[in-house]
Amino acid sequence: MAQIIRSAKSGSDWGTNELLAFNIRIEDKTDAQFFGQPLPANVNVSPIVLNHLDEPQNATKSESDFFAYLEDAMTIPPNEESFVDDFAVQVLKLMGFDAGRRVIHTRKEISFEMCGQRVDAKTDVCVMERGPGGRFLLLVQEDKRHLSPADPEPQLVAEAIAAFSYNNNARRQGGLQPLHDAVVPGITMVGSAPVFYKIPVTQDLLTAIITAQYPQDAIVVERFFPPVNNRIAYVYEGMKPLDNRLIVLKTFEAFKQLLP
Image 1: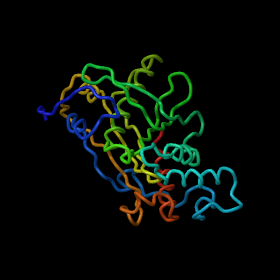
Image 2: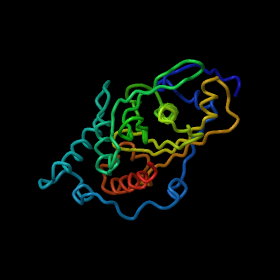
Image 3: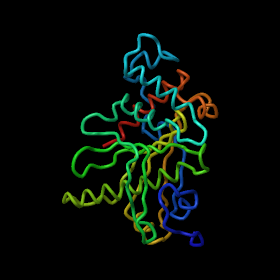
Image 4: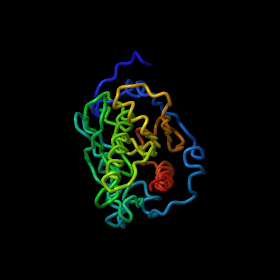
């Protein structure tokens, strides 16, 4: 792949070319392959959320918020960014991703070195560890193809690389040895339909990106589509149908176990 042009680009400008240029590919996995076991049989979520297609009159404020943000996320205004990020935050909180010392941020900017230059990457939503030297634990990238042709997956990979670099810099500043490799959990979302990823990042990959070289070892990003009955319709229906909602929330529950 020496003939592929490698140049410094911000994370929002990453595309298929950058994945090919740095020997990164994406492979679909089953639940057993992705999580090491089947999805959980149950999920600890309010029956109001699980069993009502639309908001009932007796919903609590948190339950009402779920239905409100779900409705907003499924409305994609022309020529505007959608409300997907707000819904992602709501679901992450509903599923306890902000437990303990974790916090959820939006529009967090980070950077990494690429082809001899410093470039930026901006997460739509992220889960971080609170406190000095707080690290990135999970990244969410909205699919904005209603605004531009940009594929969210290369953008998510770029953000994972930036997060790994940030986390290691925080470890150095705290007197800890940097990690040689780590798996960064990530999610892309269109409307209310998430897809889940495990993104391995290594020091060797960072070096290749900094020096504009083709890495010898491939980076295999694992992708998991929630096993809904109709994947084509899933993009448009998302978590609105109750069957889909249960499966997706079970996937969030299993995905939460990947966080440190």
